[in-house]
Amino acid sequence: MSIYELRKMNKEGTVFNAKDTFCTGEYAEQHMPLYLEGHIIVDENGRHRNRYRLHSDKATSIETALSYDINCPKCGSRLKQIGRCLNAHDLGLYKCPVCDKN
Image (tube, rainbow, N blue to C red):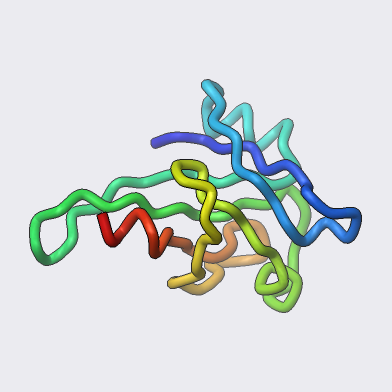
Protein backbone atom coordinates (compact mmCIF):
# COMPACT_ATOMS: atom_id res chain seq x y z
CA MET A 1 0.00 0.00 0.00
CA SER A 2 1.34 3.43 -1.00
CA ILE A 3 0.22 6.82 0.24
CA TYR A 4 0.09 9.79 -2.14
CA GLU A 5 -0.31 13.34 -0.86
CA LEU A 6 -2.63 15.49 -2.98
CA ARG A 7 -1.52 19.03 -3.81
CA LYS A 8 -3.91 21.64 -5.17
CA MET A 9 -3.16 22.80 -8.69
CA ASN A 10 -5.86 25.51 -9.01
CA LYS A 11 -7.28 28.10 -6.65
CA GLU A 12 -10.72 26.43 -6.61
CA GLY A 13 -9.10 23.33 -5.12
CA THR A 14 -10.58 20.86 -7.59
CA VAL A 15 -7.47 19.80 -9.55
CA PHE A 16 -4.79 17.81 -7.71
CA ASN A 17 -1.39 16.31 -8.37
CA ALA A 18 -0.53 13.19 -6.40
CA LYS A 19 2.92 13.08 -4.82
CA ASP A 20 4.48 9.89 -3.50
CA THR A 21 5.25 9.88 0.22
CA PHE A 22 6.94 7.47 2.56
CA CYS A 23 4.44 7.86 5.38
CA THR A 24 1.97 5.39 6.84
CA GLY A 25 -1.78 5.43 6.41
CA GLU A 26 -2.15 6.42 10.07
CA TYR A 27 0.11 9.44 9.57
CA ALA A 28 -1.74 10.49 6.41
CA GLU A 29 -5.08 10.15 8.17
CA GLN A 30 -3.93 12.52 10.93
CA HIS A 31 -1.94 15.06 8.89
CA MET A 32 -3.24 15.24 5.30
CA PRO A 33 -6.59 16.78 4.34
CA LEU A 34 -6.79 14.69 1.13
CA TYR A 35 -4.70 11.72 0.07
CA LEU A 36 -4.76 8.67 -2.17
CA GLU A 37 -4.12 5.18 -0.91
CA GLY A 38 -2.66 2.97 -3.63
CA HIS A 39 -3.57 -0.71 -4.01
CA ILE A 40 -2.38 -3.31 -6.49
CA ILE A 41 -4.98 -5.71 -7.85
CA VAL A 42 -4.74 -8.62 -10.27
CA ASP A 43 -7.18 -8.33 -13.19
CA GLU A 44 -8.97 -11.16 -15.02
CA ASN A 45 -5.94 -11.61 -17.31
CA GLY A 46 -3.50 -11.96 -14.42
CA ARG A 47 -1.99 -8.48 -14.88
CA HIS A 48 -1.19 -6.27 -11.91
CA ARG A 49 -3.11 -2.97 -11.91
CA ASN A 50 -2.92 0.09 -9.68
CA ARG A 51 -6.08 1.36 -7.99
CA TYR A 52 -6.37 4.39 -5.74
CA ARG A 53 -8.85 5.17 -2.96
CA LEU A 54 -9.37 8.86 -2.17
CA HIS A 55 -9.51 9.73 1.54
CA SER A 56 -10.51 12.98 3.24
CA ASP A 57 -10.02 14.15 6.83
CA LYS A 58 -13.30 16.12 6.67
CA ALA A 59 -16.73 14.75 5.85
CA THR A 60 -17.11 15.25 2.09
CA SER A 61 -20.26 15.00 0.01
CA ILE A 62 -20.41 12.75 -3.03
CA GLU A 63 -20.98 15.79 -5.26
CA THR A 64 -17.81 17.47 -3.97
CA ALA A 65 -15.77 14.30 -4.38
CA LEU A 66 -17.00 13.91 -7.97
CA SER A 67 -15.83 17.45 -8.79
CA TYR A 68 -12.18 16.56 -8.08
CA ASP A 69 -9.78 15.99 -10.97
CA ILE A 70 -6.78 13.99 -9.81
CA ASN A 71 -3.64 13.32 -11.83
CA CYS A 72 -2.09 9.85 -11.78
CA PRO A 73 0.90 9.57 -9.44
CA LYS A 74 2.68 7.31 -11.96
CA CYS A 75 2.20 9.03 -15.35
CA GLY A 76 0.42 12.35 -14.65
CA SER A 77 -2.71 11.55 -16.69
CA ARG A 78 -6.16 12.19 -15.27
CA LEU A 79 -7.52 9.42 -13.04
CA LYS A 80 -11.01 8.05 -13.70
CA GLN A 81 -13.38 7.20 -10.88
CA ILE A 82 -14.49 3.56 -11.11
CA GLY A 83 -15.93 2.92 -7.66
CA ARG A 84 -18.33 4.55 -5.24
CA CYS A 85 -17.65 6.44 -2.06
CA LEU A 86 -17.70 4.10 0.94
CA ASN A 87 -18.61 6.89 3.38
CA ALA A 88 -17.97 10.62 3.89
CA HIS A 89 -14.23 10.07 4.51
CA ASP A 90 -13.38 7.07 2.29
CA LEU A 91 -14.25 8.41 -1.12
CA GLY A 92 -14.14 7.12 -4.70
CA LEU A 93 -11.96 4.38 -6.15
CA TYR A 94 -9.87 5.49 -9.12
CA LYS A 95 -7.81 3.99 -11.94
CA CYS A 96 -5.56 5.44 -14.61
CA PRO A 97 -6.76 4.59 -18.14
CA VAL A 98 -3.28 5.29 -19.57
CA CYS A 99 -1.39 3.05 -17.14
CA ASP A 100 -3.99 0.30 -17.56
CA LYS A 101 -3.34 0.21 -21.34
CA ASN A 102 0.33 -0.59 -20.76
